[in-house]
Image (cartoon, rainbow, N blue to C red; front, side):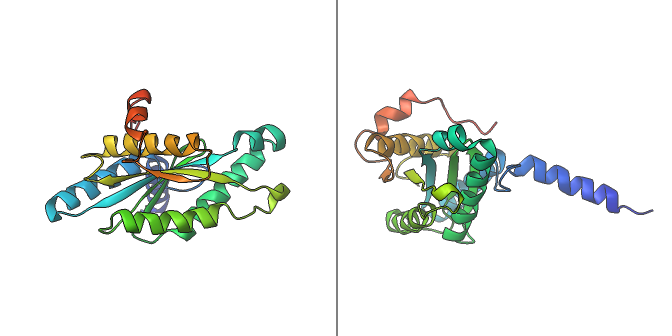
Length: 194
């Protein structure tokens, strides 16, 4: 019996369960699993890692002025640039809308996160060919274990730091331990992998 169609359908189901359908990046469920794995490894080895929450600045006007097809193309190009600016040990995910997350693999802290943020900023803010568009990005950074002990809190702290960066005018980054990030965590809804 030929099982090829069955195997293809199983592979398609796995993709649907763990990939963002627009960009092909990891989705919330896969990201949450990867962060939980990173926490377990870091606890066992006494290591550290970073979570970057990235939001595109001025994305809504792109959809409003140029249409959703252009917005989708911008999101796909952003995904491609994020993957090119990160390492193979990192996980790049799309949470939805214009929010992305990079889970930094390996055992790096503040300095490693800073280097990756600089590469990401340079890559994503380079001019886009379509309509001469140029994006800005706001990035919030949370480090395990200094900023939070688990996946949900790490994402919430990175989210609060990202809003800190947005309030400073956008197109910049903020670490979760920076002033103001703690207060914003309580104002946002708890992040959920569903």
